[in-house]
Image (cartoon, rainbow, N blue to C red):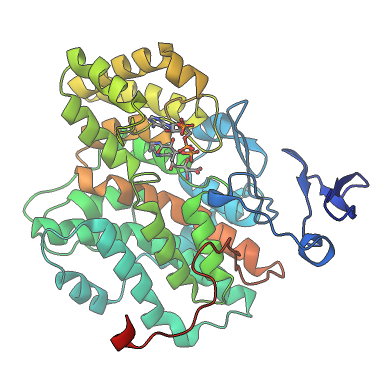
Length: 429
Ligand code: SDX
C-alpha cells in the first residue's frame, strides 16, 4: 500500500471516499476499492476484468505497452536463450534460479514422478479413438485427485509442493498416452534416463518395432516452446486455477479446470485455430479477403493468433517463436507454405489501419503451430503442448495463492432481470 490516495465523490449524495493506491514493484498502480460498497453503496462493473487486479503476485510481470515479459524478474529473452524448461520451472515455483545441487535434486524429483497409475492407462483406453486430446487431458488430470486425494493434506506445504511436482512430472506422460491411444499404439513408459523434453518426445513417438532416436532439433525447440508458454500472469486459465483453488478444491481439480479454460480458441486453443485459419486462407492471394473479414464488424471472424488483452505491442514470445520457426524449418530442411502465408498475413495486417489503431499484433499462438507441425505434432495436440508448459505456471500460481490468506473468489453482478413478481397459476398464464 502507498501513501497516495484517490478521492471519489458521489455527486448525488455529496459523500466522498478516499481510495488507497496500491503500487507493486512495477506496473500500473491500483485502487483498493473494498470500502466502496459499505461507504458509498456502489460495486464496480468490469466484464472480463479488463481493469481489475484479482491478486498480488511475485511470479510474472508483463508490460503490455512495452512488450515486456519477465519470470521472477528475469526477461523472457534471456531465459529462452540461456536457461532450460526445468530450470525455469524451478524458478517459477521457488522464486530463484537453482544452484547445481538444487538442479540435480529437482530433476530427480520430477523424474521420480513421471509414471502414472496403470489404472489411468485403462481410463484413457476408454475414450473414443478420436476424442479431442484436450477433453481427455481435462478428464485424466482431474481424475488424479481420485488417486491422491486421501493422502493430500492441503495445510501441509510439503504435500502441496509434492502435488505441484507430480503434475509437472505427469503432464507429458498423460499427454503422450492420450496421443498414443488415438494412434492405436501401445503405452510408452517414461524413460528416466532421458531429460524432460527428450522423455516426452520418446513417449510420444517411439514404437516397439523401431529404435527411436530423439531429434536434438525437436528437443531444443520443445524446450524453448515450453519456456515461452510456462506462465503469463493472470490469464484466463490461470485465473480459473486460482478461482477453483480459492474454494479449497483439490489442486488436481484446479489444474483440470485450467486445462478446460485453456482449450478455448480465444485462449490457448488459438494455436490450433491459427493453422485451421491458414488452411482456410489457403493462398497468399486470399489474405486480403480474410483481413477484410476480420475488420468487418458484422462478421464474427477474427484473425486467430492476433491481438491480446495485455500486449498492445508485439508479444515478445511471438518474436522469439517466429525466429525459432525459421530455424527449425531450416534445420529440418523443411519448408512450409503456411509459414510464408503467415508471414504475408502478418505483413499485411501490421500495415493495415484497423490493426494498427487497435494495436493488434501477432501473439504467442501465431507461429507456435508452424513449429509443432514441422515437428510432427498433430494439430489437435497443439493446445496440449501449451497445457504441458503452462502447468508450471498454474501450479506456481496455485502454490502462491495457498501461501497467502485468500478469500473465496466470488464476483458480483448487475442484475437486469425481472423485478419481484407473484406466481401465476398455469390456468391464468
Ligand atoms: C493467449 O491473457 C493471456 O495472457 C493469454 C495468453 C497466455 O499466455 O496465457 O497470452 C495466451 O490466449 C493469447 C491470445 C490467443 N487468442 C487469439 O489469438 C484469438 C484472437 N484474438 C482475439 O480473440 C482477442 O484479441 C483476444 C481474446 C486475444 C483479446 O481480446 P480482448 O482483449 O478482450 O480485446 P477485444 O475482444 O475487446 O478486442 C478489442 C477490439 C475489438 O474491436 P472493437 O469492438 O473495439 O471495435 O479489437 C478487435 C475486437 O473486435 N479484435 C480483433 C482481434 N482481436 C481483437 N479483430 C480482429 N481479429 C482479432 N484477432
